[in-house]
Length: 255
Length: 246
Image (cartoon, rainbow over all chains, first blue to last red; front, side, top):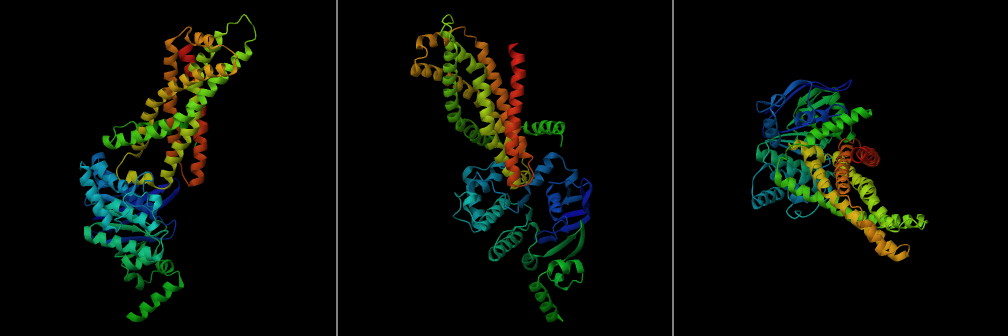
């Protein structure tokens, strides 16, 4: 379990996170939502260790990230898989080399063992024919799948995704959402997704945390988000007419 | 950010760069890639410029030696000295600051703005060590060879210019280049090559690594990197000359 306890983070004079607490459970897909500037990215980067909170603690299965020595931190990093918004694949490496990179860096496996592992994860993300291609030769959806393959190649305990659907068409976005949820379930990992995509919220949000002005304003499931009377959440999630109608239809149905 | 802060941050960066590589096999692969990108791919431009600069020095010297009492072997001697002392180590380095410096800044800067550096950090990799150390080692070991090649081709270019223009005789030119050979001058050229190689690898890396924004900022950082690398080379050239030759 990841437990976040009252974290604060500022940049100069501006306070971005003003005391957020949350927990993320194994085998569940948790989503962080909120308007631009609400602190989602800083929150995710704090979980990843790219930002160090001034106050509060973040613990990964009892290991408090701020109190670890360099060796433990390195070990924790190897337990983390990350899918970046723009995929962040290494341009100069092929798909196979990109996915193999963490194995080369952190394991003593032979080349054939690494190839087998790469082949297994690329098959898992339905990309069996892309081994020798470079990232620039792939579509956005394929790049995201390679990024997921690279994130899971080391069998991580924690998977973080920053806007995994950004720039994708709705059909591909659903494929990526489902893939992340299947992997979370299959590998029993803790998945935290930062998203603006309301389809993702409805489809895979087993736990949803709504951030507003650096604070946690609401927490619940995708079912509870239909029924919530929290005005900020309703304004944000149901800002489009389509979603307003969907919500109304749902509420009429259950009443 | 003022200049002193930049200098401090640059040395902090070097502190992270000079750490033991996390995996020697990965480091070796990166080193060979950098030798190709920074060294082998620069051979053509350095050879081309050195050859013609050597030719021009020989022609200019010949045209300006009008007095019959000045011996003609001075043309070969002047070409050799100019190539060893300044043109090969300094001129080639300023050219490489443009070619290699902009490549380093734009490649590292693009990695920064596309979150590839964040990806390395999240994996637990010391990104500065992984990205910059192979560049420094490749440059520091390969550039003295490039400078040696430039010296040879510059002197050869001077000889070819004489043969083509009939401004001086080959025998006189060869006598000039063999005259008063001082091995320390080659050491001086090698020292300058090593120091300038270090600057060419690190200053553009600094500009690329700490870039913020998008494509426009990467472009600006590349320009700044070339300017600052050239400025640092010119200043160090002055101090090294004072230190080693006076």
